[in-house]
Amino acid sequence: MTASIPWSSKAETLLKEIPFFVRPAARKKIEKYAREHGLTEITETVYQQAKAQFGRKQ
Picture 1 (cartoon, rainbow, N blue to C red):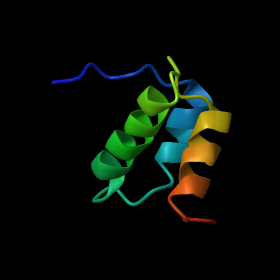
Picture 2 (picture 1 turned 90 degrees about the vertical axis):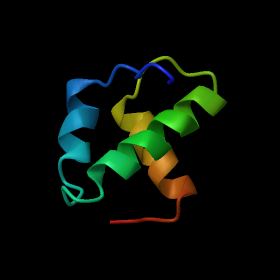
Picture 3 (picture 1 turned 135 degrees about the horizontal axis):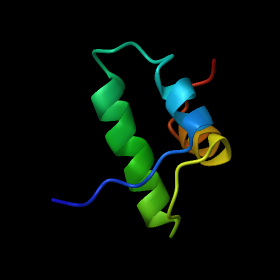
């Protein structure tokens, strides 16, 4: 199993806005996006970029 990537507190707060029942899948997709782009932390910017790539706008 791949280790989890650290999340900034702001990114964690944004993640909590996602319904709890899809949150684990969203976390995995965002972490996968970060790994694919060579990133070592999920920040608010990374969260927004990943979300935009997945086509989900709020």
